[in-house]
Amino acid sequence: MSECTGATTWSTDLAHRWGSCGWAMPSTEVTVRSVDGNKEIRDGLDGEICYRGRHIMMGYMANPDLGQEHVDMIAGKNRSSIDKFGWLHSGDKGQRDENGMIKITGRYKELIIGAGGENVAPVPVEDGVKSRCIAISNIMMFGDKQKFNVAVVTLKTVGANGTEPGTDELDPVVQALDSSCTTLTDAMDSKIIIDAITKAITDTNNDSKCCPMPPAKIQKFTILPSDFSSSTDELTPTFKLKRTIVADKYMKNILGMYEAKGAYVKFSA
Image 1 (cartoon, helix red, strand yellow):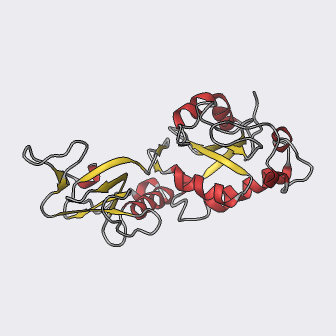
Image 2: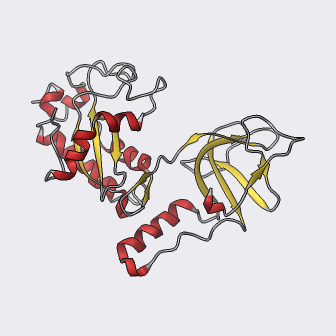
């Protein structure tokens, strides 16, 4: 990655393992750390790959002429990229084997690139909203090349299990929020449920751990008419979100939110 300003790991023709990035180069450090506690993880287990050394950048440079919001955004990027111990957090998911060789197995940071070039990590924001509202089953942010972020939200319904999207009947935990609602169709007009989601989004926007900079905030949302599932292709067989599929499927509604007024925009088929 460019923040390293050069190579960090290497292999040789005499010592190479297929799928590995090799060992840390001399005078560089590579570690695999837990995402939640930033603690080093033992060999063979997945964590976030982090780098440290004289080749690591000092940080992203802000331009004061672009205003305080830009300066705050860059400061937030620096805080989320390099920790107080000097580790650059790559966003790559990986592990170190018993020989010290590094292997990348996935990505933690699925970045959204806003209209101003801001790099926004959606997962912490999405997880923050979901953890604050028991009614939410899934949420996906969108903001690529846009001035702000919006989100599509699905609610918990009877029969939804990841493999199947479920029915129109609301899960009992959702019905408990508003006893007058029994179906997903009802929930789309429920002020109680809409207010609960709005509050979860607002609280997450104000939580610097989830949302380290203003461009990471969610400004608008809509409730989708069905949950995500692998059978409808929004989720992988292991229930990971297929962002491009969801974006393509609901692009009309996503773009419509940018033109609509209000934080909540009712879904229109």
